[in-house]
Length: 306
Image (cartoon, rainbow, N blue to C red; front, side, top):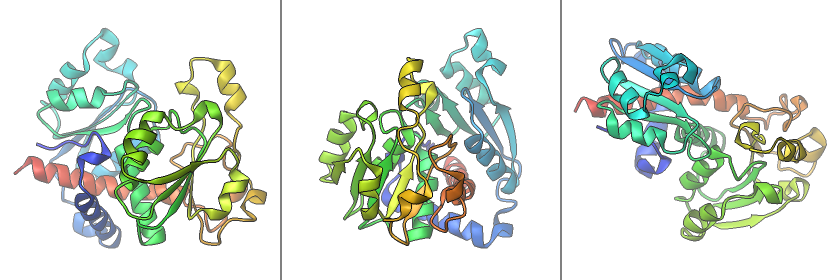
């Protein structure tokens, strides 16, 4: 039985196969409309979510399957003190596959070890968000047609941003990748990511506190919000939340084929005036997230049946 907890759980070849399946789903949706008939997805969301939870649910429905689950911890037995392990064992009796989001790092891994069905990590604290990374990779594939030889600017909260950490892990396996790390000092990329991923894999990177100075070199700009829920100190959040705001004037030196990405939700870090710019890709990411999760559900269910 196979689960997806970390993006590195899948080889480059397996990720490319998922992307190919997602592209086929986009081109031939009817072919997949009954693939999961009789199957149930359990969405166990111990933390608020709009896009991830609903994209998993819509993915399963469009595959002909059904969905059970909950959207907040207070509506589950976790409110009574039930462990993640016991929850996973219980849900294994009701469903065929689990998608779990949890505020504690490592919780989906605990669930995967206890469950007798596949578990998908839908985000665990500030640690990983592998299905968002799959959505990001599908978006890059569709916008750029390649994963090699790209300069990617990561802007905003690089310390707590689980989407950033997962994307760095995924892209570190390709040639000619360069990262430009754009953040205030307090929200820099953790040293363990620099050492264990970037340095270990010989990935070129630089740190630049200025978005305006960096933007002209970028093929992809990956914006993130400063996450209030990751801060222990409200004063620190208020001081840092407006560190980077992308407005049309800041794109004057950007490439004409720049791809502007964001895992969403945004607060004010991308002006709504950018939405109509052809370089804006963040709502495409949302749609791509549904297609790649459909491909992932199919893969894990097929492997579970072997």
